[in-house]
Image (tube, rainbow, N blue to C red):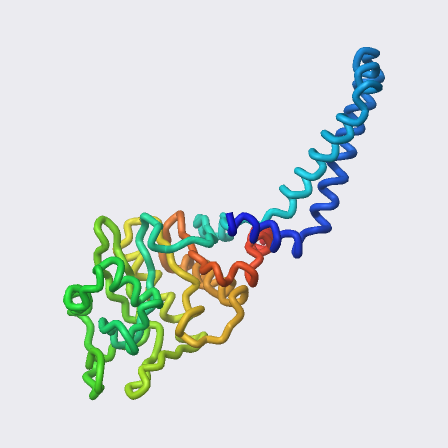
Length: 286
């Protein structure tokens, strides 16, 4: 229920003028129909004379309903990305509820130790805690198998996995019938374990992830978070980051076959900052 009230509150702040227009439009429609009906039916005119208050209440409620429908801020929209054949869904929902393949950003070491190295609240950490039930050894084994064909560089670290892989490296692991594309997006300080990235790194790493989706995905739907909005420290406003990711999908379509359905799962703390209705309108107009 809190999310419903939040949708109305945010929608009111963004679209109250549109809501007022919708309310007046409903009133105008009711008035026009009333005029027509009462002109052609004396019984209707007589009934209205005796039920004027009820009529006004109903008209007011219909107008209010029109206002609320117009301002309500949806938590999910879908639109076709131009020149791709891919329908992109933007959804305020947990990616772990998506019965699809996932793209998940990790650090360049593909670390498996929860705590100060892999934050339990990060999506990387939640893959370990949710998918692997916190079994770091099983996660490590699956990642190492997935990276068997890649050449890494061994580095001295006081904690964490000692092998660093090139940014953009993709390890594909299984999640039941689905796949998880772990893509190296962030550099990691060997002393502080702090992760950071840049826009060019994000652009290239997403390209590698989407190439892997093309290579082994068989066209299966794919979901990803708002990559780069978490611990990657990109410091980009969510709306700009979202447009950047959508642009990368369009760009990748030029050289790769992408799924017909892709989803970007958005965190609830972005709800006040992302106007997905306007984002959909902008892409639909292209």
